[in-house]
Length: 216
Image 1 (spheres, rainbow, N blue to C red):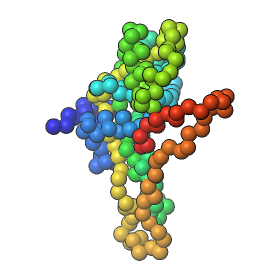
Image 2: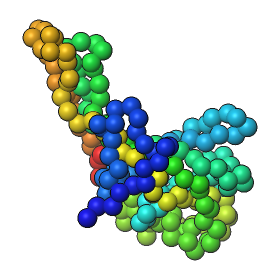
Image 3: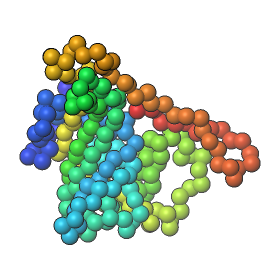
Image 4: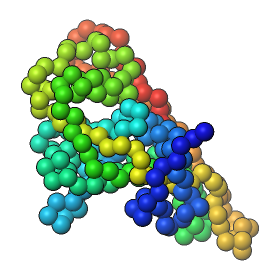
């Protein structure tokens, strides 16, 4: 049986609630499929939104940055609930009228107070989990991370609990009076695939190409 996310006054979807879901498994699938998120926070009354890459282990959502970066240091120095959005664009919805155009998408919005990962061995383990998401099997081929790199990198996490999913996966919804308007209407799906790998021009020797993550 699928678990449910905690629905609160913050996580409850108010606009378009028919497109909302609080199914945790669905949220986890979207989080795992996406490679980037946006971390929203405030400082001195000013809102900031920072794009970054993320990963997940179990019920926890992780991200990293320079140890002094605002999106990992700020909410630790002054404990604060952050808002994180993860979005996947699936297609353009072309309707018969301009105002009924839309997009098909999947998104998760999460809330939580970050906690910092302090233990060095745990940080390195999380680095590997992150890299395994980006390029499976690559970690073992790389120069090992050193103590300076570990110290300079901040890793934080929030529990995946107070969150909601919002999504659209349907054809255009036009006014009935427009259904016979003589123009093409429907969905242009976004086909997602990685292009040909481009090797670093500094390398003179050919090496095995890395494994790319699943296209989303």
